Length: 184
Image 1 (cartoon, rainbow, N blue to C red):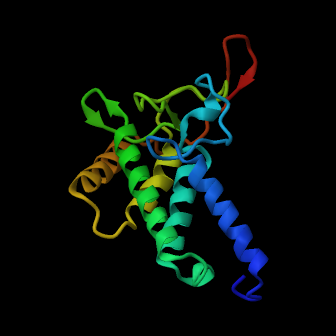
Image 2: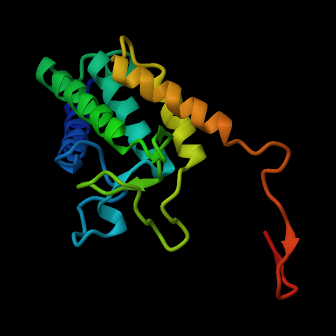
């Protein structure tokens, strides 16, 4: 749209953005898939997996700023809607931060929408803190201008937790299991 000023491209942008708005969960944030499947399936959880939340928030923040590819494409009401969605997402991020025996830790790949606890994803994704998604999320959160005291505390706590739990020198370990089979 920026290059051509052809209205159909702006309309496509608006349709896609409205889908993101519709897909937003009532508590804030987004699921891996939309429309939702229901019944508490993996698809319905708040999803940090694959940097979904981080990337959607980045996109909405860029639209709200109205610069670059997003200059002159969204009106003030749409920009405000984007800002409000990011604010709700930050609120849900704070609720989802895992409590590790009284210490704020980082985040799981997916969280329940009611109690915000880590949730089972696909069969190989057990509820656990995800270092990769948490690191990407933290990188994004540290770009937020004028973060609240609560957000600053969450960032510091997550960085400290990840630092305290890092494994140095071995990212992957190959071994032979009890059945004599190669495993990792």
